[in-house]
Image 1 (cartoon, rainbow, N blue to C red):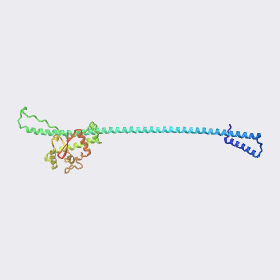
Image 2 (cartoon, rainbow, N blue to C red):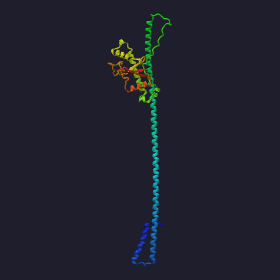
Image 3 (tube, rainbow, N blue to C red):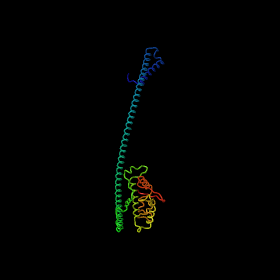
Image 4 (spheres, one colour):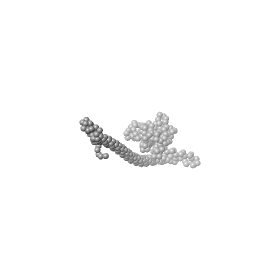
Length: 317
């Protein structure tokens, strides 16, 4: 088959039929003659050729359309595959970045915890050192008082006759030394405390608050040991109020009353029984922090509360 298009073949058949029609009208050709049959057969052959060419073109166009459709489907499939691969790559990069960020945060958190633990240990060592110095000063002062008392006893007994050891009454046991400070918390005690008692409290805050409370106790009992002749009127009044507040539950133990913590009358900066901005009374307060710290100390058996007489006594055990 040549390269003639179906339209050309159809035009050729149309011209042959037009020639036959013109010849029939003009009667130039005799009907039933050989010339008419040849033209008619040639026109039929041209129509048949046009039909074949048209079907061939339709088939070619169908195949071309199917091929284009298959290529378009393949292109879409490849594009979808590439899009999915790109999404997987983006998701992998996001997960990788997230993992790096998590590792970085965990590392910073661990480093911060190590620094806080080291700082807490240093503060605890410093507070223990201060506590040891305070205890050393107290022991030295107690030894001096015992030496002074023994000297007075020796002076009063030098004129008495020496008795037979068998006839001498038994010596009373030495009085138990009064505890003037609440022991600070260690890391083990802090970790063992129930979470509901801590309420966002840290070991540093608890020990700092206890240290301020101990300063109040030490300042109060240092004031109570001042000779009466050297006390002012306010100190004497508070001294007798302290004596009245003592009972069996506080015998041999140091304690503070809640109003004493609020007044801090023993403060060197107190004016009319009230502390100024430089007074000792502002170191420990009965605010939520102070009461939580006292609750923790009571839970650990370091203090107890004794009520009566319209006031609450915080007794150091």
